[in-house]
Length: 599
Image 1 (cartoon, rainbow, N blue to C red):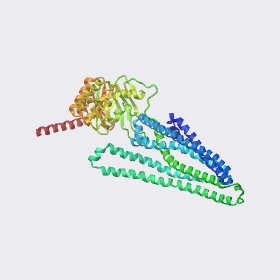
Image 2: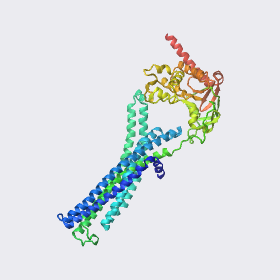
Image 3: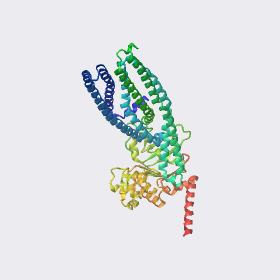
Image 4: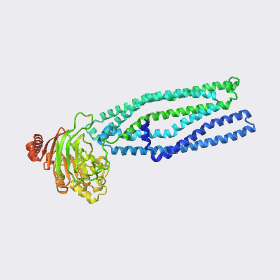
């Protein structure tokens, strides 16, 4: 745990000064508050000895009253300043912690993200950071103040009467043991709670993301029950943990009150009869009030500590979860002095095999040998689960090969600087993502310095210019979150245009024209052939018509290349390719026949 705390404290950075100043003011506040009962006892004793009307008593009231007012003023000022600096430090710490977490996640490989899951990462960036922030503020204020004030109270009680002060001191180890036992008991509950928080957030994320599917299938009741079950599991574990933690306050109150009763009993006898015990010689109402005040201070300290104890117990698990992310190293890192220039768009697979996990029994890709020349158009066909997407993800090094090597521009992808490689290898996914903002802002993800003319050029290549101009605001049309105000085909074309704006040497289309009609698909391919002939184009498709004019067609099945060649060659040599082609052409012929009959 010490290593985790050390990792988290690196995020304090520019807020070290307020973090260090806060304990100083807390120390001053605690010291003043512990002196107040001592001087109050002096005042009571002076009045008790001289009488209320005596001039000496009035002098004592003025003297000790001034001291008490000064101590109270210093204590108040110190508390206010401590609160101000603690808030600044804790909020700044949380800000830095969220920044560091988000920055770390941005550097993660797909494998790292798969390990944590997106819902868990969201929980760690929100709930866990909030827990740690609150705990940090409490540590700066209460955790610093409580032990100091407790120690001062015990010291001052020994100053007032050493014999009776041992009653307070004797209960401290007992209370410490009880707190440790409670902490050891509740920690497993909090570990389970945060895992269930992840499941709860995952339920919400799935429901909100797939709300259209939920409503289409009228599954609102099912999703509500699923959420209620996850929420109920969180509630049950929290209730069990809180039941145990609730024992803190009554236990502490009992022991401190019991100690106060013992002191009051002995002191009462001493005040009535000073011969009762030699240790009480000179003991009076002032000393008794001081001891009771110090007892109340100790009780107050322990009560505050119990509150902090609950918060810190929760935050320890949050801190561990945050530390897991911050200490996680990305599976994919740029090598020192990595190659920063991709010479051309050639892609070579040399005896490549890949599996997503070292523990996996089966390879997703096996014995892949491919040679794609720069500027070629290559089609990839295969059934669902044939690892087409997995294959192309190795080219921009989204995953690393398990065996063999992938070369781009004649250089192993592992030798490239990651940013340099990915700027030259653009991937357009089937499940495209547009961000909230204007069309121009979305397109400029490809090149933030692109001119309006360049935007129009790539949109014409992607067959997006025509539909963009039908919008009232044209290229300034606002895209809603997730691109919900444009169709699937329009979204795909915008994403293709965004990728083209990077002027990549390798352009990968992962079934990214599946939502456009065959005519538009043909126009996009024609534009590619005429306008970007030097760019290597790798097209994953379900339709044979999308790749039949490619320079090379690769057929995948079960993670292996079972055929490779031109369309005409594969019709003769590959039964699987021929079966796909005939199934699709017969389907098209049947459609034409039906349409002719209807006419």
